[in-house]
Image 1 (cartoon, each protein chain N blue to C red):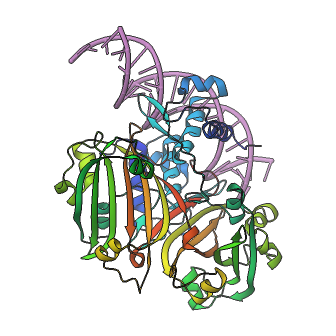
Image 2: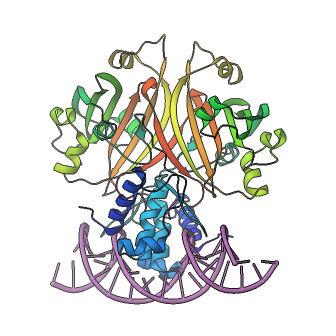
Image 3: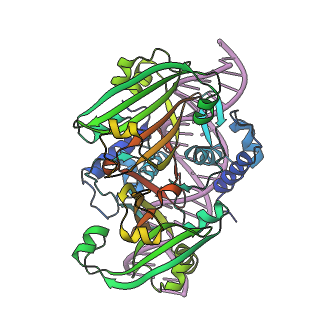
Length: 245
Length: 245
DNA sequence: GCCGATTTGTCCGTATGTATC
DNA sequence: CGATACATACGGACAAATCGG
């Protein structure tokens, strides 16, 4: 049940590209030939194609056509540019994911926490510490801070399944925007313990710090994800020129 | 001399947001009030705003308005989601950047190189090894492979300044798309030497591997960038729902 | 080099839907 | 409920780039 026409066209084209229906490296059928197939206006088709561009699936070339530059990636990876929960990543990569909740506390942000997370001082927060494992191997240590007023009723039980599923399906919250910063940091004793690392092997890990906003423009989540370096792999598709359509 | 109307509107709004002309966390003037100011159609204005959304500058909320969620970042960082040369990053962060060319060779891709880079076997390539420094401190060790047929006339002298400047201003090539993968790897002796690292300190670094395409859809560059971990910082802005407008 | 056909890029005006207040 | 604001969709016009004759 796609909400909009351009989205269903986008999904259909994406599927056809992934399945190899369009030859790799070649041009897709022209706009004018696709428009009657989808029974849509030119703008609507172009919108669908614009999304394929930002996905890195195709490249438009003025005067020539739309080139299919899709390359399948078989390795497990996390996507950049889109927000994905661990559970979604696991299922996309067809792996068995599991989550263990180490800590679940409610507290009030003091000045130190406020400065670090971006929440205001005095805000009521949940702090959740979790380990995500794939095929039984611990890969990610997560430190989550959620704004209680925006995410009421969170429990350790929910945290052990999927917080995002709860936010979207139960609270009907719309997650929109996430500002993320990636860095590399030294491992701590906590990392060593829960990610089963050995300092003599890797002595640092990949850290992703994110501020996430809901559709009301409220920052409701601050998270630090600490990734095992040997299983960390982030993908990105960067555009130099246009960016939108 | 902005090429298009929507781009100049985008730049103007972006500037006004950065300069604090619109209050932080508040709504921007509505579309209908901005349209007469820019003397444009609604579509054109919405296109400009859509780019601000992907930049993480604003968030549109149906029925309410467009919220300014811009937060200035003062730390030096590299942008994800857009392609930027080292020289551009340095100047954006107002730092003194310098580049040292360690190796500059021309060779033919054998099967091993072809498999690793994605170029076809037998392709004529440039291989360039460079160190980028900021304020005299070596930060990035770059291994570049360029397709000779697409990037003719490259010299070590050009490589010591800016290859992208040469590509765009002299060869008039349009760089469009770059697929990137970020990982964390152990440091090698080469890294240790040129990035002045100490294995007893950090024993790994951030690696960004990228395949870059020009406007003809030709992959003309394969690059591996190895970043000093203590100065590595990548920013990203992720969108969960739409992606385009 | 020119010209015309094709193809993508930009821009406009309008109508309708949907969410917020 | 009506007014406001953003979201989707359509159709048309012209510009710019590419390609073949």
